[in-house]
Structures are given as structure tokens and as C-alpha cells.
Image (tube, rainbow, N blue to C red; front, side, top):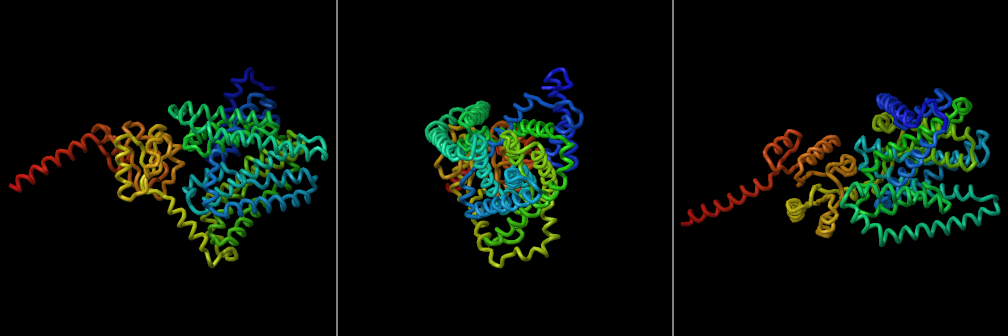
Amino acid sequence: MTSVFGDVFTEMAVLLLLAAIIGAIGVRLRQPLIVAFIAVGILVGPSVLGWVSANDQVDLLAQMGIALLLFVVGLKLDLHIIRSMGPVALATGLGQVIFTSVVGFFIAFGLGMSPVTALYVAVALTFSSTIIIVKLLSDKREVDALHGRIAIGLLIVQDIVVVLVMIGLTALGEAEGVSELGWEAIAVLLKGGLFIVTIGLLMRYVLTPLLHQLARSQELLVLFSIAWAIALGATGVYMGFSKEVGAFLAGVSLASTPYRETIGARLVSLRDFLLLFFFIDLGAGLELATLGAQVMPAIILSLFVLIGNPLIVMVILRGMGYRKRTGFLTGLTVAQISEFSLILGALGLSLGHIDADTMGLITLVGLITISASTYMILYSHTLYDKLSPWLGIFERKQTHREEALDLLADGNTVDVILFGLGRFGSGIASELQQRGLRVLCVDFDPDLMRRHDGNGYSVHYGDAEDPEFIATLSLKQVAWVVSSVRDVSVNLSLLHSLRDHNFSGQVAITAHSLPHAKKLKEAGADHVMMPYSDAAKEVVNKLFGEENKKEQGE
């Protein structure tokens, strides 16, 4: 490590302060934080200030951030989404991957690159940023829109493909010659099969009951999740794959458990913090002198990503019976390259398949497309209104598939989200169910979850006080949010989170004293329930109502 600072702690302090300042400027300019963090790396790297040229500590934190990124992606790998979306996610995802990689290869080859380099560049152009797309769609409240659901299904397909590509590249890097590549591929398949079977057995017999015990403490649950992600990442390296593959499979192994939303919500901030060091490390490794020669190729490839990817998605969706508006809004979401593209480039650089100039080209394309597509997604509806008259070729007269998907989505909505399954909460849940309402119950006590599982209403593991968890809930079609939780601070946090996510339904909150009821009302609760007071009034009304009936009868 070389640095102008006397110790690592001071260097980290300066890096974090610079990241906070430049990140704030980036947010003010409506730029993605990824761009700002890469700018920090360029600023402190040898090309500008020269504060950091090689730092083992930053590299270690960056590798942990990559592992957690892949873990969270695997954690969200809900195969039900692919099944429910029918063939559209697979057709769109695979169609876009094949089109972009094939055409991108010929463009890169035409720019004078070698076949191996062109292949890397083409594959890097293929994948879209899961983090950026989901973040922007969440900010616009469009995750549950039809184009949002198609985009997420498409991203899942891309995530599976990118993991397979990394496995293949790792095998290619380990093979000493072409003759050994076949044997190396067979060895990788055997080891990969053993790895997956072992994880499957752990999923079936160990992980779910283990998580049930660990979930009694959310801190312990999160600690185990991080340890599991890093441990399987290290196992992946030991078995000849990569830490990315191992961490991804670690996430997949927990994706079928009822604790995945809480784990994912708790890890988002840590993941983003550690990824900061990846992008700083990436920026610090860039030589600005070498980027000058890459400007024209980067512009050509960026235009291909910004225009070609949306067009192929629109063509595929039109062929499958979707409206031009759905195709256009979905297509805009894939008009950038991914953080996985940068990781893939870094893997190729470490394997000796590409040089630093190619890595700089991929990074420059990432900077251009991520920045431009952010604006395209944020102003997607405005762009559609302006371009709609010229998009008639992508319109279908018959859109039965789109209408059927809308009906399917409506069938998966709930009427009431209930927090807390104690005595009061479980009574409310039963009463709501008897009245024919669709109820989703949320509690962080695994014993209560097990006790109420199978009672006819959905049971979810989560914390009402966690705003990241609230963000994972589909609130668009929900009419009521009800909390039977006693803690006033938890209920206040829930009210603030619902307000931040523009929840438009009714909110009923539990209080156990008049001062708390007043505070909750002032915080925005539509109704405040006081169980003991309400129960006492109901009993008194019942008793005296019966007595009055008797007197009148006499």
C-alpha cells in the first residue's frame, strides 16, 4: 500500500468524507451514486491526487461488497416471479442477452479488437444494472406496474446468465491450453454439481430449522447471513469457481425461507457501504491518460446500449402481444450496463484475458450509459408522450396477454396488511378473514409465524420498524394497514415509513394510553385502537344493553 497518509485509519476517514461530499453533489445533480463513487476513486487515484495507488484494505472491503451484492441478488431470486410472468421474462431476457452479445461482438471486432477482447466487451454490454433499475423503479413506485414486473423478471434471467458466464470464464482461465479446456469444463461441472447438491441438502434439512432458531434474535440472523455469504464465497474460491458464484448460491439457498425479505432489507445498507469501496478501488485503478483513446469506441458502444437494448426489448414484447407503451417503458430500464459488467471486466483482467485499456473502455461505457439511462428511466413517461406517435410499429391490436397478466397481478394483491400476531392481532386477522378480506400478516416472532401458518391468511416474517422492509411490501392495492403492536416507537416508525412511501390507504394503530393515542393521531394515524378501553366499553354496552332490554320487556 502507498499513500500520503501516515496510517490506514486516516486514509479511510478521508475517503469516506470525500465519498460523502461528492456523493451529495452527485445526488444534487441527480446522478447515480455509482458514478460519484467512481469519481472519488479517480480523484484519489494516481491519475489526479495520487493519494491511493494500491490498498489491500480497500480491496478487501470491495471484495466483501461484491460478495454481499451477489448474495442479495440470489436472496431475491424468486422463481415464482419467472413462473408467474410466463414466457415473457425468459424470452425477453434471453432474447436481449443473445442480441446484445452477438451484435456487440461484431461492433467491438469492427473497432479493431481481438476476438477474446471483443467477446468480453460484448458480454459486458449485455447485462443491465439490477441495483439501479430496482432503485429507480422503487423511487417511482413502479415495481408493481406491468413493465416493472417484466423488467424484474428479465433481470433475474440476466443474473442467472451472468453467474453461468463467470463460471465458464473461471474454467477458461484455469485451462492451460485448448486441449485441457474440455477436461476443465467437465471438472467444473462435476464440482459445481457437487456444490449445488450439497447446498440443496442443507436447504432441505438444515437451513430452514436453523434460521427458525436464529430468527429469535434479528441481529444474530443478520450476522449468520453475512457469515454464510462470505463462507460460501470462500468455498467457491476453494472449489475453483469464484467468490461471486459462491455468494450468489448462498443467497439462493436462503431465498425459499420466510426470512429472506428481512435479511435482504437489513443487508441493503451494509452492501451499499461496502460496494462504495469497490467503485473507489475501480476508479483508483483507472489511468485517465489511457481513457482518451477510448472515447470514440465508448461513444459508439454506449449508443448501441442506449438505443439497441430498448429496441430489441420492444420488438420481443410486441411479438408476444404487449402494447407499445409497455414495451417502451420496459425497454428503457435495460439501457445501461451493469455493475456486474465491471465485475466481469475485473475478472477478465485478473485472468489475463483483457488489458487495462479494455477495462477502462468498459468502465467508460458504464459511466456514460448509467448516467444517461438514469434520466431516461426517471423521465420515461415524458419520453413516451413525445415519442409515442413514432412507435406505432411496436403496437399490437390484440393484447390479450397483457390483460391476462394484469388480472393475474390483481389476484395476488391483499386488502389488509396486519402487523403483529399476538392475541389482539390474531383475533383481528381471524375476523378479517371471516369477512372475506385478503390479509397479509407480518411478525418477527418465528414461533408465532409457525403457530399461525395454515390459518388461511399469508404470514410474513418482518419488522414494522424497519423502513427497508416496508419498502419491499406491495402497498399499491392495499386498502388498510393495521398494527396491533404495543410499542409506540415502532408504530411511529411504521407511520413515517408509510408516509415516505406515499401509502394512500387507511392506517389503524394500537395505543395503550391517551397520550400515546394523541401522538399517533398527530403522526397521521387514521384510527387509533385502544384494546382495553375499547373492550371495556363494548362489555359495558353489552351488559347495560341487555339490562335495558329486560326492563323494557317487563
